[in-house]
Image 1 (cartoon, rainbow, N blue to C red):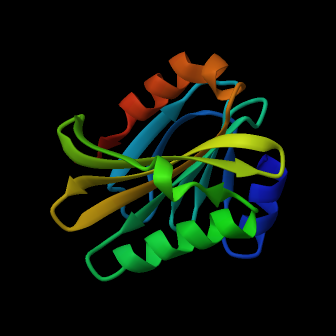
Image 2: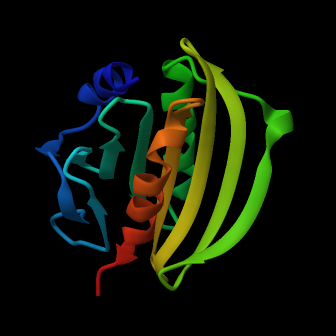
Length: 163
């Protein structure tokens, strides 16, 4: 999955690769930070961050948006999934709201498929401050992503606003 993701992003984004650790992003004016285990890959992009599990079963990216760019960021995320032949089952939509480290969070989750079979797809919108939003797009291989549940929960729980 990462191969497809990397190829799609290569033409669009300038990345700064990191093996793991904590990343505050965007570098020029950080609004959020995330921490990943040493075995995961964490890359900064020109719009946020992308994270991949060691076996490439899980891939997600976080884009920074504001009131003017949120719709475009969401459209870009949907286009990215389409370009990578990820098909969403609209009937499977589940919506929820939550708080994450003091930030309001809206979650949209679907079942779907990619070239390798069944996947889980998610999009979350998180508000680290009144002017900015984080759009998190998730894509994980069913049957494989479950073995990363502990790491994934820790990674998502590490997402916090930069003060």
